[in-house]
Image 1 (tube, helix red, strand yellow):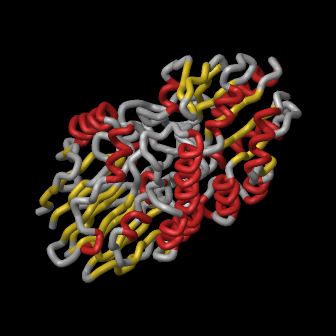
Image 2 (cartoon, helix red, strand yellow):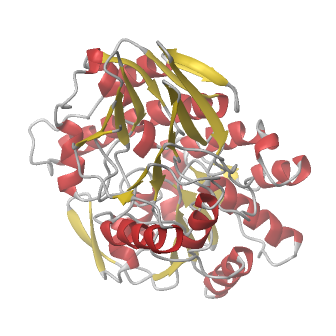
Image 3 (cartoon, helix red, strand yellow):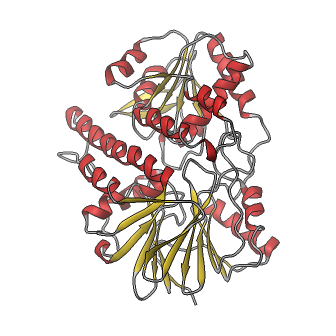
Length: 452
């Protein structure tokens, strides 16, 4: 049996792993590369594996860096089914068409403004491609073995990261291949903790925060302080927001601030059709949450939903104090880039980064203190305060990853550290080797590994 790593090696994006038993091939995760242009260009490259040769795809969760390549895979010949949890299927039904729509809109905007180097600019895939992918999704239950091919069974365990997120165990010829997916926090304010697994013969573990621990800061207090000082100076708080997971956590924090009477009387806007739809799905899966139904309902009703482009544009001309949550979370596209253009130059305002910012993204440049960012073909001065809350992350940190790994009853034959920037992955590799004495590998892009 072999595994080929087609993404999430030396980067946190593009998760794709092809398991080849000699009889058939199954792909675990099917994500897009994000961040640096050199990574994004990989999305346009032909896969080294013929999509038609794949029997099935198994998704750990719905985030685009784990699911966003599906429309291309299907357009290029994949004919099988895509297995995932119900929550993942529902979220993919929102995320994939929206990702395609953003790509189409960005290409159209570039063509109108003439700032693309390509003539004409083309989207990576279309909404029709995305809809075809959604129809291939087959929802399965947590903690149930499901046949995904001849003598291959998949089992989905709660990962706690977002709604529907799972760690996947492939049962193949008596062996267990475990893919952690993205693991959530052990004490997240909203999501349940990830389930501990007892056995893995071969383990692929994420390492997004493998080199650091989240600060011991209450994110509700931190958000409250940022909101107060922004509103006190008459500013607008713009929060680039991941539509799935982060938007709902932020809404819950704002709900708690309102309960504590620490939220100023200013309007809150959720300016992301995708986040609005994801919040509706979030409310259907209270069993996956740490909070109760009343708190969930309160969080989901915190913001004014902005659905139309016209409403979004009007927000940019309104300079009264307010809070805007808008996609995308790393400011790589979507409506938030227009808000950054409108509110970034004014020192009364604040741009709040609330999650991991992949290298090469606008969010990463803002985080590093950039005083200018390029938007729509022109340089925009950033005089607004740029703040960051790290403790809202939906990813387990280094200590939490180690705690999860210690849940295995015996060492895997081999552990592969994936889904992290090089420094983070190597730091986790060293911790596993030194503290657990396990055999560890940091796989290379497109390399095949023999599991025997």
